[in-house]
Length: 368
Ligand code: GAL
View 1 (cartoon, rainbow, N blue to C red):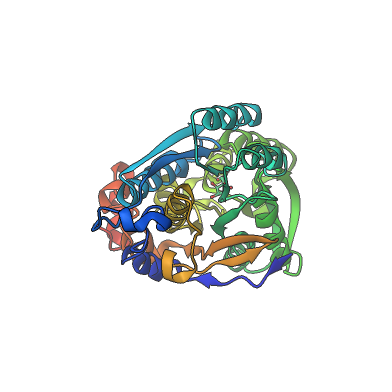
View 2: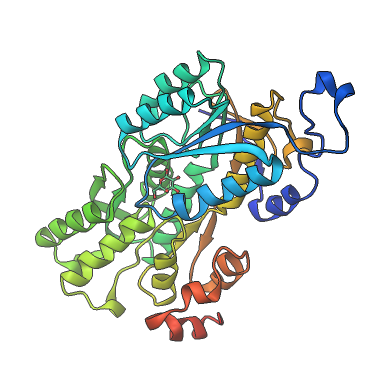
């Protein structure tokens, strides 16, 4: 159950965070008399960052570099020890043990399997190493940060219901059951779909979020149903949306006849499809605010400080399932607001998006 979430308008909060945060983060408060003075950055320490996979572009293109840059800015003597689990739970458990052996003072963990990661949290905590559950919730973690995942699912479903005119049969592709966010996206989406005029014809929980599985499953459905029966597709993320579009075109649907397909993560390929009219929407998560908040909290913890409330971090703490949390707002992106969101925000430059086949669609959307 979600208790009393304070939400932050992510775009504005990103601006707030830039100014003056951690100004009070001198090392080791109790011997501040002996500080040489004038230095308002933190002392040192190793921060382990464990991310779950690399097929979804966000992790290595945004989360990792943004986190590392913020740590370097706040604590030049801190080190980030980075691991990617490639969607392998056991590999991630070994990576945690390695990180602890290598001297991590705090662990930032985005678990492959949320429920299965409680043991990893306990392993770290038994060595007095606090754990930040990054993006995906882990019971017993010291801190948690994420976007409001149930709202993500609601926003996707609302956009789809609207795009299909609130009637007809859809396919539904959810995320990996091991990912706690996937359950939240799915619950949020169902809360809208189940009381709409749309019928979910078939539903799939993709075991690893992969575009390949999404394509295969959709291809299988298209051997049972005529593509013309499918008025829309709920895909929980952009990787799967790409697989769905490949399956539909593979089954002979023309690119300009595709039904509305949803997504999430604002991957560049999805933004291009949106501009070209091949995907209805995506969810943009301004990852800087999440990665930078994680970096701030991690630096405070590695220096033995209590992560603060708004005044220290620039964003509000809240409570999610009993864990101190920072929850940010997702943003819907459609053809109409690509320019005002991911481009205006600097998430992508026009050059990133307007390549090859997409130059014309960019011009039409006023992006250049
Ligand atoms: C989720 C994450 C999403 C997305 C998804 C895979 O856990 O919150 O942003 O990356 O995994 O696409």
